Image 1 (cartoon, rainbow over the protein chains, first blue to last red):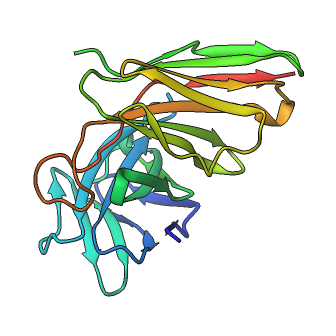
Image 2: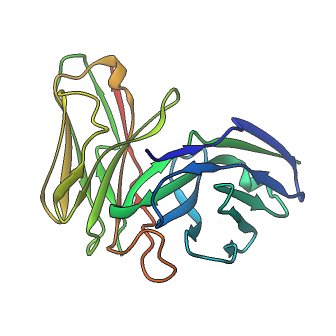
Length: 113
Length: 121
């Protein structure tokens, strides 16, 4: 069965510093995709970054990078130079064949000024 | 282009009443997903469709919940009868066709609606 685990319910980071949000996954499928979404207090879901299971290089999107360690089944999100606007809930997600997409429990990030 | 459109945005109803949530996916998207978000259970996948056909409904909590997709541009999630524990935000999301794990083309990124906040008293 597929599973996503986020073990950090809440994280604090100082503005302008980098922060890593942890995500581990479990699947027996060879083809899968890993995603991070952001949910601000306003409630909408915003796509941040994607990593395919066959991608050999870590994905990057601006200040976001995904640290993909396939053997460890981890897909951690790194946010560089944190901003106050980064305060939000962050969800790790995985899709497998047929695009079934499941989410982790989420990590609430607080950025301190 | 218009995004995923959900209605109503807010619904307050009394226990035992029927609730119908509606979703219009992005045109051209073959996949449609219904999620429920609560503080206790997080984001749960209830059901998803591909080309209007339900593919996996294993997340539907019980027979009180039903979902339909009569055509490519419309889906409903119905709760009958509703109970207070159904109170949640219900998200609809859509995605264009592609392959999970692909390095190019569509990856299965979900495009979410704004959600329908349901309160059952």
